[in-house]
Length: 444
Image (cartoon, rainbow, N blue to C red):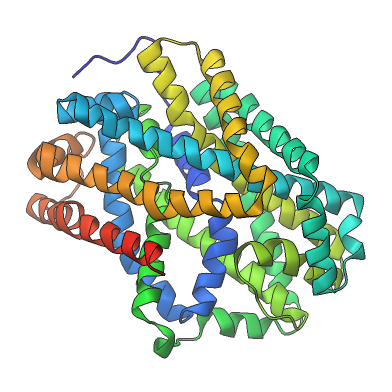
């Protein structure tokens, strides 16, 4: 393997990595997409299926990506080349980097809208919205103003760039240690407010009643997809974050808290969103409509609605920011490792690129939907599939397990069971599941 570069940075502590990885995993999909999927696909039954998918799909691939980065201490392109041994595998690693870069482009646009709505909430502009028609008109009024979308996008990308300028310890790690606790506190405040509201019980029933009759094959695939996408897999992020780990780091000790925290935050987000929506007698809507067209009306119907609206969009902005910096970092690491660029130069170039990719999305809502579909339905599943093929088939499970054992000294693990688990999950089940996700997205 190629020796690590002289400028390779490392996390200052295990907790720093955990917060950074949590920040990457926790994004808009946790707080908006996950709640609706739970409510619309069987409530507690969907959560049970989702947790099974986490264990058999997301977690082993999450560990595999960290393992790949830790083994090579290089960016995804370099790590794929080291393990795969050919230029073809290097191109596969570049594909995952470009996927993260592509995702960060359109994600910055939506996140910019969140920042804009946060500014509107602070100014009290959302308080005039008192109907669904008014909320929709307010939303599309912003979208018909390209300078607003572009301006909010620039503000968001600049904020991410400021954090990325400072590097791994002083940027990613320090920001995550501050932002994640604030995000969790805001989420707890939102959840407690929702639980204390009238008719909150309707929201809990909507989310957690066992509705096995609503669990369809499509619902199972949705759970599978959410479990895969929620941990930022297939985008080079966790490979890059793993490359900043010491080789003696126990991947299970740092990996389990990230997955557990991501799941808890998703469930808290579901509680917060739907107890609030049902408390004011509104029916839930999905995705973007819920975030921009439904919740502002709900906040205006509640006591302290002004502070609730500020808290909610601040929560979304923090979640979006921690995910954005993680999506941009693989491209920055590539330019530093392979091109010898300074971090500041790499951050400037990547930030400009992210802004340019996002311009068509900022100008057209339909284009944004196409970008979203291409990323979630095609690019990310392929990226995840490439990781499983590299470690499960090219490098082999036995070599992967030997590398995984670094950091497990003194831990009580049944080696045959560990090898069986990774063989089944990474080599066989994960590729089949990713293929199923791709089919579900492409043909529904």
